[in-house]
Amino acid sequence: MFVIRSENIRRMLRIALPFAVMPALVLLLPLGIQSQYYALVSFIMVLLALLLFLAGFERRDLGTRRMILVSVMTALSVLGRLLPLIKPITALTVLSAMYLGPEAGFLVGALSAVLSNFVMGQGPWTPFQMLAWGLIGLFAGILAKPLQRSPLLLYIYGMLSGVAYSMLLDIWTTVWTYKEFTLAEYAAAISTAVPLTCLYAVSNLLFLIVLRKPIGDKLSRIRKKYGL
Amino acid sequence: MRDFENMNPAAVTVHLMLTACITIFCMEPVLLGLSLLCAICFFIMRNGSKHVGFHIGAIGMPVIFALLNPFWNQHGTTVLFFINQRAYTAEALFYGAVTGIRLAAVLYWFRSFSDLMTSEKLFYLFRYLSPKLALVFSMAVRNLTLFRQQMQKIRLSQKAVGLYREGHLIDDIRGELRIFSILLTWALENGIITANSMSARGYGSGKRSSFTFFRWHTGDFILLAASVLLGGAVIAGIASGATDWQFYPVCEPAPYRLPLISVLTAYGLLALLPVIHEGKETWTWKRLRSEI
Image (cartoon, rainbow over all chains, first blue to last red; front, side, top):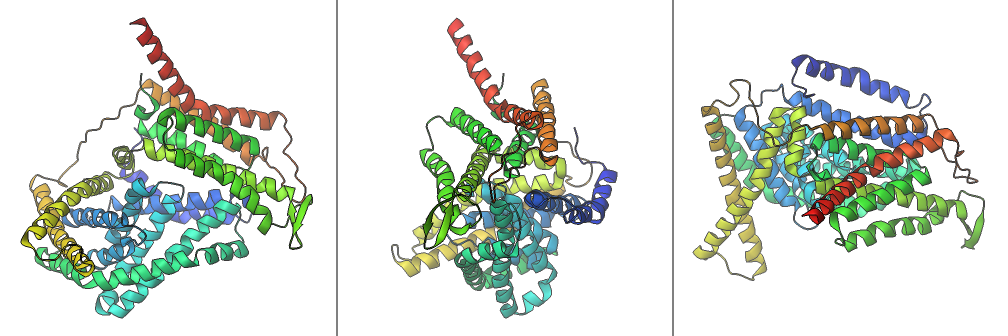
């Protein structure tokens, strides 16, 4: 069995991936790889980035309680994603990141993407969704203090993350359908997705307005009560 | 004697991912046609005549792409006709059709992949990456059903208490929010209790052993080796430029000589593997039954 159980290989992956493999791929791009492999390279890059985060998770000691809370929040946001049209997944990811920390935020986002895609349909876009939602959670966790202090900042973050999510996935749409990446094609993809982007931003805002107080209070209470 | 569904998930994943990913990243019409045919065959072998809507959507896509591509793509030299002084070219039509076939084939492969890979199998794959992560994942899956049941309980008890009118929009929304709020509190507390009992039983104190339904049989190794070898050969062929078509301004096929033909053969075999496997199983089953 080729399990990555060995400490050494994990450590090697953690150092080699961000400092050697990924820069090498980026450098190789302009040096003679033809544009038709952009899709392949971007796909591999996203997979590697995910691998990096997820393999690093094994070493981090999140604590059993926090780990279980991550699975609870993931399940809740997947339940929410099955609603028609509007998805509270971003709002729930951001809120859990604010109170449980950046790693937990990344995990809630990335795992909700895989899990909900069992219903919505898995595809080559799944890794992109995982990375997009994971990063939204990660940054929300890093910005936890200011976001907790000012609701206005949180709402702005929510709307911006809706836009960022849509734009990140449009990179994939562009390389996938056109097999190459030019700014004009990217702009076309973004402009066709404007209604969806607006829907994301507005639904994020609405969900954050509605959920900020109750969920925030509950998470901070749990944190205080059990000393997480 | 196992159908493709019951092969080792790791081998199945490697095979389907190679087949689908080569389809995504290649623009050779014959290869894409092979891919689409095998994908449809495999899908129909597994599902029979179900999912007609999916077939219509997926097969309609090449047609739509072909018809629409010339409208926004002005490359190409063979003009068919003009619309609003914009040329509608045969090359763009063909390119659109090829793109459509590619997308349809990928859709079929991923649909089969989604059907084959239950969350339990994905859990098994996550173990390769990180046992801790696999645990979080599997608990999230379990929580989904648990929360749905709990939600139903909460809804019934709320109704019994008579806190809000039924069929009243605002009351309905407020009711749903209240249910969600109650569910959240319960879920968090329940999670903490679970975590406590896990710690009490020694979770995290040492190395864990784990149980799985999936074993490696000879067939799995053969599938894995065949996929890696054939897939590697195809990727090497694509990287060497044997499959490069030129679509614009004039359509120039890749030369159909030995390299391209061997790439096509290798890919055809790769994509046919699941079809052959399912076919063989069905045939063996029929033969065994007729002997009874």
